[in-house]
Image (cartoon, rainbow, N blue to C red; front, side, top):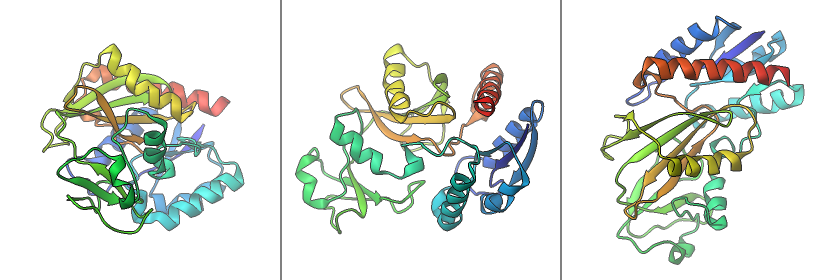
Length: 268
């Protein structure tokens, strides 16, 4: 079963080593699959070579190669190419509209609008987080007490004095592990987190909402002053996994789950 594994080994992620993680994963996956690696800008040209699936991993923010990604996506859909994660994701894969949709539907998410005229719908706070609707990796993020600008361009959220951020990692619909940043100012200094049943119920709410039968997903949340968890992001395209920060047995279990998921995906 030959797989085309899409990664940007040289992407300069702050506080993370994308390349190291993908070297680890590909070394393990080669035990079960034939693999070829490529940069995300080269993926479309390699589709006709007959791979059983294209696996998108640490390929960096799509914002940096949006035209190439859009072209790859269109070509993959037209050719019926299997892509892992499948291209029907409703989270970050489809942009940030889901934060607005989930807010309107009453899900436990940081309240989000995209029109300064709707500011009265948000909690009254000293400052608001404003970021481009098509942004990624906190690119363009600013804080201001008076958000302005045209409707539909930016996401606007109350700046929350949260206790910590926590991420829940899933393969298909199965929870694998959780990591958290005890210091909100150092968000990439992560430690293992013991998820409670209530935490997992929260995270699974968004996994179920996303309706992806196969794939890797990361549910990012923050612990609000009231004690509840609020969704920050649902990463369903190429979530970084921080596998270097989990115990070896957890890492092994994750690779085993990923391998089983890929086998299942390829035989559907």
